[in-house]
Length: 480
Image 1 (cartoon, rainbow, N blue to C red):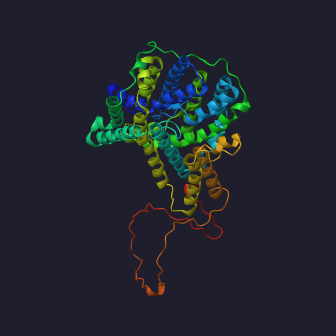
Image 2: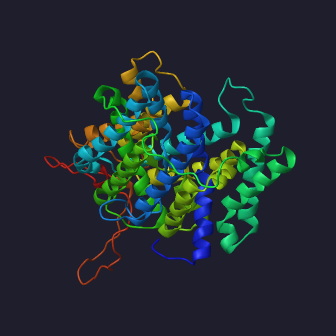
Image 3: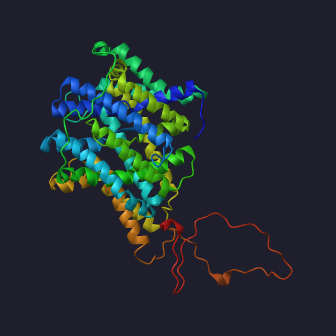
């Protein structure tokens, strides 16, 4: 993970991270522009700012200066849920208040972080694994919407878009199957390039936008004017930041596992959250929504096997450069969303698999663990699988309930506390049926124990069910 690879390889692998995540800041800015009716000039300015903030955040998380960043291969980008909240605040109170809400939330994150770090012991692998599964499924849905568009929109699930996405996935699989060494590690990037080439051959691309405008784009501070600070308007984002910290917990642990680094969550997670808050503070000054650590780049690390954090640091430098190179930024925006979505589907699904692997180590054969995981998955996936299920609730309540990741993490954590910290443990042994044996029908061999040295065979590494002796309560290590 700390290996400094040759510069050429680092740049190539870093570019792969950039191309996979590029759709998110581009689509976020374009969605802001369309929803709020922003001018083309402001849109280009925000796009440059999105790349700049994403690059600075990636450098912070990867290099870990002072107490900011966990020194893990992270890439940062504008968050999806925070973008929706930002647009809602802007529609109700104006863009200046929305910008103020982002800045207030970043400061709020710094203030509540010391308390949150003390609560990390209530997030064992059972809780984090459940949360990562929900994150992965939610990300797969995001990738799918890049391919199909939203239901009800013109061209929804167009066969040409689906075919292009499936072809991109096929190219990625083919490169991963046929290639070895460095080329195999670049399978995601090569699949994305092949998909773009196919789109160019079959449908053509709008290359006119590449030549529009100047060569350099410099983002401007406070593009919407002086921020206005309204605590009530910022409350939705502040509440979301709590769920975001829980999500950062899962992402930090799963990222560390993907690169084989042994971390102390009580130290590493606060560093990740500080990096998120600092980057969000920077992004807010440029008119952007909250910035978050990217889940998809963890999937790239796992798929490619390239663990070096200097690769994502190189990606950060590329993103900073893109923030100033307007023609390159416009060229990236030409890549069809179906191609990016096809690539994202593979990478996002890897996140789900990593969550399943974590749950495999959470002793799900114990009844309470199975119950906790089932309830958390049910409530966490509900708003993801059935959008608008809470539309009849007040807006302040919907903000929390419609965050599937936040709900799943909260439910799993609360149930873990209820079953493992606030009440005596009942017998929670694995559900194994032992055969009925009549002891009277079994003849034990006669063994003279005297003079016989028992061999030192050690203790087998198996899960032993908790057994409560009279007057003695035992708590398994997994409960903490």
